[in-house]
Image (cartoon, rainbow, N blue to C red; front, side):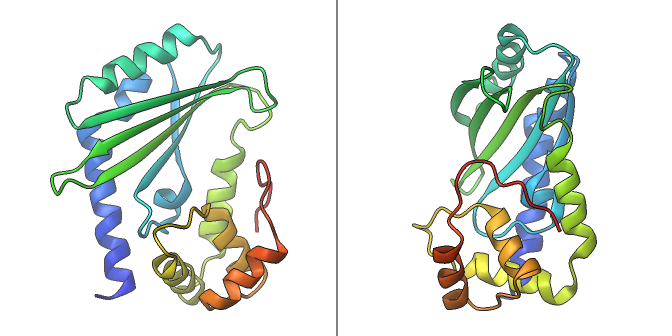
Length: 194
């Protein structure tokens, strides 16, 4: 199957999951602003089945965040939820990770980062996604998707690594990418945009 066809099919499936979970109206019901970020937003979703949202509220309370997740957990296809409290870090957020099982039995990860409005990363990753989308060419899009496709399932690689390697540094093959990763180890939050 063609790389672009796989990506398109995964994009469609991801949007079906967004609709089926009601994740957007659920967060809006607690007064949040919810923005899509990551590979679904940039059209670069490949094998790693994840859907990323950044969610903002003027005041961030555990009670509101848990209330939204309680509603999400009512969906019988949501099989597991994890929570991380990072309110007292520079990220000023609560991380939620939910695993949704699709009709074929495959698990999709939904990452929901609940962020305090006005904090350091308010809007930052939305801007990163927009900039990546704006600079992509057909050739760089296909190169990124191919690298993602060729990545062994056992490897955990964040999307920004692919984007930096291909867009900024001209990497085009998986062996080149492996070498690039050795020279550019990722630690912490990566603050890069094209």
